[in-house]
Image 1 (cartoon, rainbow, N blue to C red):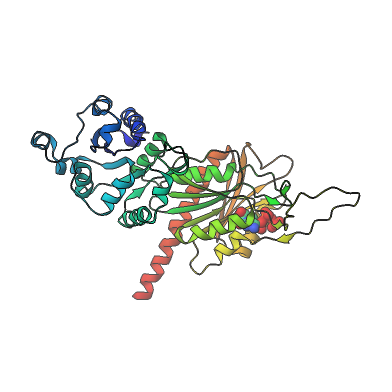
Image 2 (cartoon, rainbow, N blue to C red):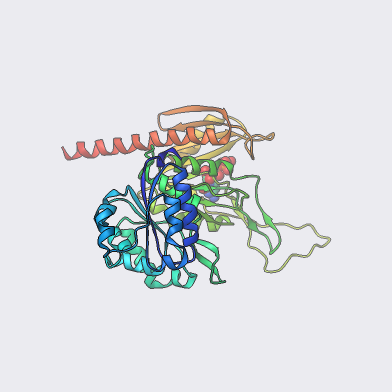
Length: 410
Ligand code: CTP
């Protein structure tokens, strides 16, 4: 993670059990070449000894606001200016509340108030505290002020309960910190990607699905994140791990995928529909259907075309569709682009084992007035090439729109 080399990262540790994970975070940041200083709240020092952080960071831990010696060595204003980025991990419910209200009565709050560097919080708390409207309102006001909120994740909590409230893992936090410094072709944009198959239930135990592995969509999500985008990945059932710095929303049916896309599309600058969405669905039976002597006839109804619906919005994002073709790839891709009103279509040849799973693939890419071939390559490499093309076309379209707006004004 070269991007973190020589970066000055201030880690704020507040008083929750996840403070022990912050030790690993500091160690890994040092390994990545970052210079790390640690500020602990009084409660944090009840969970982990400051000496641990001193040993891991290679510097004395900063703890007190009103300590003349500490202020003389490196006061809160100098600390705030020193940092290239501040990450509070774990951020307890109390710390979130204090920062949301602009408090400055302990060192961590004062540094966060005084800094102009990017500030990120990794919340960790009991799930009911996280879900409480007070915490949610505090988070909303922090987000509105540009503070990054990373997590929490769902899972087993230290209190013995289950739910949202776990601090994100150190590796994930480090990837997100790196993202603050990476400047790529899609920095500052939000990319919404669909991936994988959908499952259409027939009864509680049976469903209709397809052969999509989700690999192409996941590779595109990873490549977009690498290019600096904020990425939301709406994924049907797959066995794949979510890529670093990608927010995954898991769905099962075409209807759920449709709803999840509609929920996030307003925030998206670019929409990439890589999912193999079922075109037909069934009204599932409430109980398992018993076999009988008679043939079973299924009555299927059409699902919503998510991609076409997104493209038809009044202010659509830059919209990218996929086409799986068994013949006349470019011709069919151009027709599909026109029919659905898309900015760009990536088409591949499927059938005879081509196209699905962990195999190399090739793409024919078409857009208005142009097109190119991306030759056979592993999906990760192909995804990077496609994201580079998408970024180029997206910026080109925005420039053209801006030019015509300035001409209108002139
Ligand atoms: N798509 C979608 N919602 C659907 C169906 C498809 O968003 N309900 C998207 C896919 O993610 C893909 C593109 O639309 O980007 C595929 O278009 P589609 O018309 O379904 O093409 P194919 O299934 O490849 O082919 P055909 O035209 O033969 O049905």
